[in-house]
Image (cartoon, rainbow, N blue to C red; front, side, top):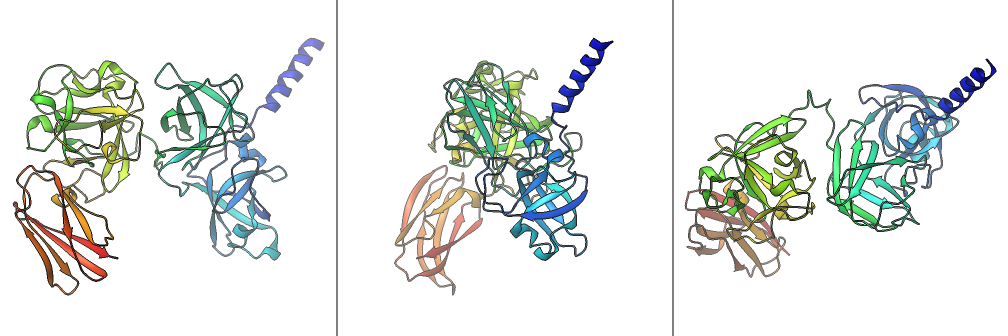
Length: 475
């Protein structure tokens, strides 16, 4: 009996040491008391002092650092005023529901003389850039490694790693000071790091180097969660697309219109051919297949490789991870296209604009050879809830803008440019150039403009009859 009683006590003691399960629900409103304190950075979350307002969350909902980086909208129900804050610290003495605001945040919803007020609050997505950061703690090495995720839109629930492109992921334990620690070390790097938010959404940051006490930018960000994959609307609707690279304006194309297994993919000027058209289908959970219209084979990675610069090819679709893709918004109707198996991204081999440049997978970089615009054929848009689709205007690039003495014009459209005209704000034509390009040309030319500083308008007419206008600023 005595032994059983001691065992029960030990069990209860161990359970008491377990951190409380994360109390996170974006649809719930919480109630408690709001107070304020003087925050100068360096709270329990170990974040550097940010350029926005912060708060400390009660111990229970701080959840042993699980709430670090979460954003709250805190409201004073007596006057209806609200403030947005990020959780940077813990308030050990606060009761469940309480939030200890930094002084400047408290002053946005109440007078400091009140000291303690009733509040309601709820979780909201953080207003951050479309990239996260990874920071390796001082003292990190291949034999003892601690890292922190920063600038994330949603709270982080787990982090795992592997040697870049090799093996399976290993979960790293989170510490109460908001670093993820591998006490035996993560090895020399580089690493692939899988980051999961509280909604189960995953991002794989590839080829991350071990840079101690330095910030490594991850050009990816969690999307705003809207209720789970069962009700989450796909980014792209199912349909037939032409997929164009931003750097060249050229299309994802099957080399030689081949119908063979493992046919190569490259970029080529769009000719409205079936081997340049792609059936995109949502498979659930924001994963897609991309199938060539002319032979119904799927865009895949050769040998299902996770290695940098492996070729994109066509294969019979077998529902393999290497044949599934995720589209991530890159702005202005463009997307990054991520391979589900490798976590690497579809890219044109280089920034070259010529026909025939191979399509590979690579570590995401903020470069135009990684950005793709899916053009829904027979429809007006590829991005749901948007009216944006690629037009000939997208294929006329002008820069620098603002300009000083001259600017460069790049035309990558299939049709030729008949003429380009420069006008001032009063509608007076200042310069005109005719018969600039032959069909299928893709080259630059300079336009000298000795004009006073001010606003000007470039007007180009294509052989299809479309008129394209661009606004320019002369310094």
